[in-house]
Length: 305
Image (cartoon, rainbow, N blue to C red; front, side, top):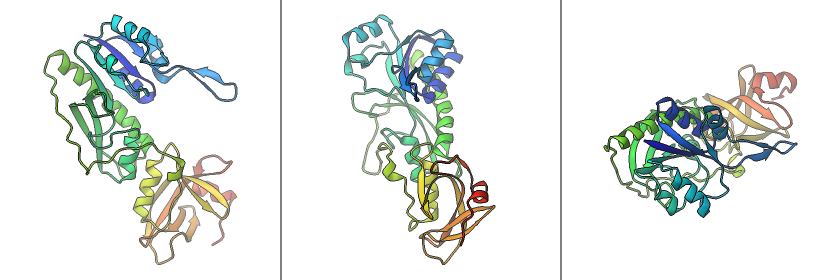
């Protein structure tokens, strides 16, 4: 069964790697064009391109998938299945109709919950205890196709979005390979999504979400810290200095007003929150500085209480 893969970031690499390791015939990999980065503005290949080139898989990087030449090229590859994982471009209906069996997408949530751009982050921001990946048949509407299969996983209370991203990428590869096997055997199910008001759309993240509001409960703020890694990161201003907060844990009960710094020592920086509990910052980065433990920061920047 001939497979064409479409993806761009490291999440997609994990999926593609699993497909290759499981012996599926990957005829080509489509990924976004190289982009200039850093001061020299040197063109940098996508993670999928780097992996595909090393694996000897032909790589295509069209600016648009709506171009007739691109569609003809894809048609000539004669794919039985197209697997999409974080490709980063909307696909036209004409492309969805090319594969002989199906075009499927690896989505990092349990659909229909968290359709959209940032499902991993929102699962943590909302304090969810469970998430997963869904293999869906692609449709014209974003993340609205029928479900082929889903895999669930618990979210560790200390896990941040970057760590969960890596785990779901591995789980997505496993799910994609299983879906290919079901399609090959003609046993792949189709379950329509039932979408109601109880489900949340996973909108894109923004810097406006970063500031910590100390009137909120400590648990909510910890979820904010976890959910906004690696970007845009939770931030707070202390004594005229802005910090990005990378790690925080629950502290003791306190009667102090929200935002009051309770302690600043080797255990971290404890700040009173709106629910009468403290949040303890244990890892941070000051503007112009590097990421470090709160204890290391305090050695050079002691806080007077």
